[in-house]
Image (cartoon, rainbow, N blue to C red; front, side, top):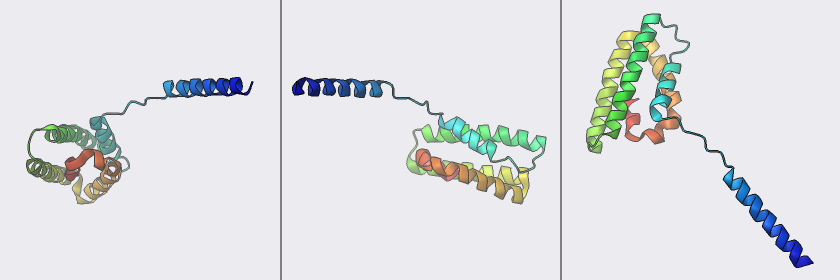
Length: 130
């Protein structure tokens, strides 16, 4: 009698374990491009930008992310990639300073850095561009 109860308990436990494993949720991960664009676009909220500034910033954000990921996925050496990321950062800094002015640029860059921090390990060397 005891062995049949133990056997029944083990069978129910194994079936329950299998059912729980089979029902695990798989949450799709957003790709890096959309994550970066979302962070960069949201970072401009609250900065009182004109419509023209918002439009230019959005266009540049898309271009910047495309270039960033192209460099990251490229076949160059780490040193070449570092130089490319730093060059991309410098040209973006100049563009943003011209577009926003130094005060708004520093606020925007701070917001972007706060948003990017959780992704720095995924970005690897590309984090240098921020």
